[in-house]
Length: 357
Ligand SMILES: NC(=O)C1=CN([C@@H]2O[C@H](COP(=O)(O)OP(=O)(O)OC[C@H]3O[C@@H](n4cnc5c(N)ncnc54)[C@H](O)[C@@H]3O)[C@@H](O)[C@H]2O)C=CC1
Ligand SMILES: O=C1[C@@H](O)[C@H](O)[C@@H](O)[C@H](O)[C@H]1O
Image 1 (tube, protein in one colour):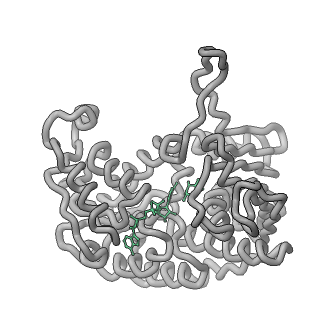
Image 2: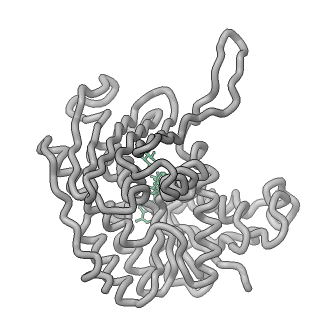
């Protein structure tokens, strides 16, 4: 079977990371094109990834058998042109969330499988339109970048909870802390861009929908602008009455920290304790914290992209679907309402059986 020719749209922090992953670490795939609103950024990345490849670079040497080598990566000015291009079999969308809807519709129009970074779109209505448009095509082309599902620790937690060994799962306690974010990262983005991961984790681990969300705004850190809400504390209520809470604190200063504790009838299980190497040196003892998500979730992103490539070559998806992206968008939309009202807000979710038949 020939390699999947992948184009990446949006090559900022996440897109550049994925582009490099496809080019250097993913078997059965080849990075053929990149596009970005900032052409210079796309050109610099294409030049870097095209450099010295085809040879025995350390990264390609790590992957024998089906390794993707970059011959040359084309820069395409217009993202829509990249999506339509005949030499692009599949697309990774890592443009900002506001650009996703139009670019997803273009992927559907051209029949291109797409791994779309979260959030699927900016609101529930447009996300539902995407779900409906994909459904009309009669095949799943969209996978959403909720990478925690691919993290080995989260995957093991899911397996443990599903095994029933601990009885029924009752509660989730989540912590999601970033070292810092740009000052342009507004309070709403804490819900839509950060908390959306826990929204997906809760839906996935419990295997049911979130019906109500309350977002609390505790005393803010003095390190954000007046009027900004960081940290935020949210409570999700699920259809069965189970609950999940999450603290999201995006200017924690220390490092990147993501934890999840599941409490079940006969025990609890926690992931994200970061029990890596514990050292004593230079008058310090302890472990290290990752600076950001690219380090903490590297393995998850690698598996996400590898499994997406493998599934796409089989004509399938293997991960969170457009429906998952829509359901998360509906919860976040209710979360944004709760963020401004301070009260619990019911999630308005379309009837899945009616939408998907
Ligand atoms: N799964 C995860 O853990 C993470 C996911 N993300 C998601 O990845 C996406 C990108 O986020 P970042 O890389 O952090 O942002 P970024 O700001 O670093 O990069 C976005 C890039 O898209 C370009 N761009 C802007 N408008 C565009 C358009 N209409 N078409 C094509 N390119 C456009 C910008 O010039 C920039 O280079 C977002 O959806 C974000 O939520 C981001 C970080 C982590
Ligand atoms: O998706 C991500 C970012 O967009 C978001 O800004 C961060 O808070 C998350 O930790 C990261 O995984």
